Length: 79
Image (cartoon, rainbow, N blue to C red; front, side, top):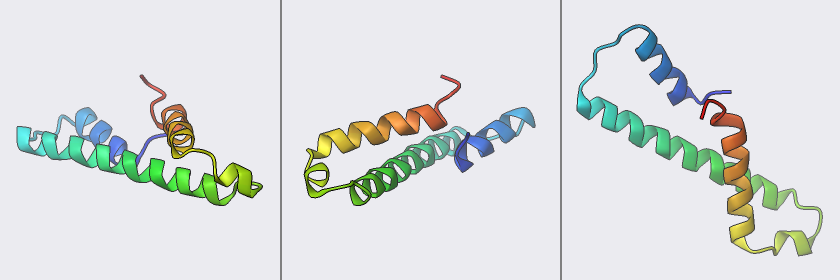
């Protein structure tokens, strides 16, 4: 699976789209922001769907690591 920004970058590469370094910097910034947003959404959904209060009170680091692992599994398959 790819994010929208990853799809755009792949399309640009396949079509030999000419871009500036400033555009590439902005693309990388957007990819990072998109990653943060996906991880945050997954983390919040996981906390909200936890089966009981004990699970909801687990340290924030656990939920963050779990969300990052989920992102890497789904969106960093080519790495």
